[in-house]
Length: 222
Image 1 (cartoon, rainbow, N blue to C red):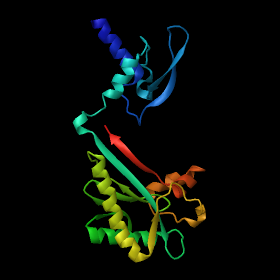
Image 2: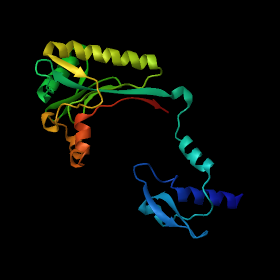
Image 3: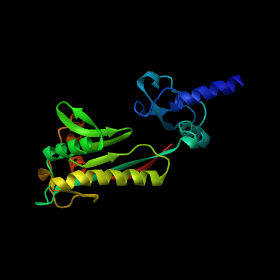
Image 4: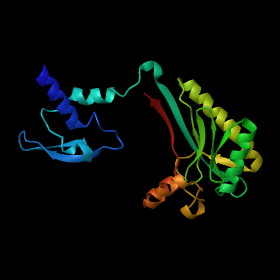
């Protein structure tokens, strides 16, 4: 039993399960003395020297590691992200940050949302566990609260759209729910004054993705 326990600990060290998070793990190739093959393991500099392959990893090892992070079924939730492009009714051009700021202020005041500020700029709203956020190209995004059923997330999205439309239509603003904006060029789309988005602007073609694309997704939170 002692040998089995030691082998289990060494296997765990080899796979990096006990000491590594997804963010800190780095893939490194480590030579194994069994046979003459190499295996790819997750290891950080602090544990790399301790990586020793003592026995093969099994499917059960991998499944067990993933399953250990799962929540019990009664705590499963659904979360929604819903993005849309704002445009001016009169010109069909993308709306500027100043218009988005006025829209956020209007929705916040009328429907009791709290402002999210970055320096002097309003960059979003929050209400309970819901957030309204901005993407680099001014995409207007609902980040829904974790809910239990599809009916609840449907009601959440519909309420959000009703609130946004109520303020936006008074401002002469409409929204597009298409996946990619085919007409506007990158230079036509204003950049949002949001510091956390600046690193995304240094990745080549990624600039077009963050400026001109939308995503709507429904995630099951385990």
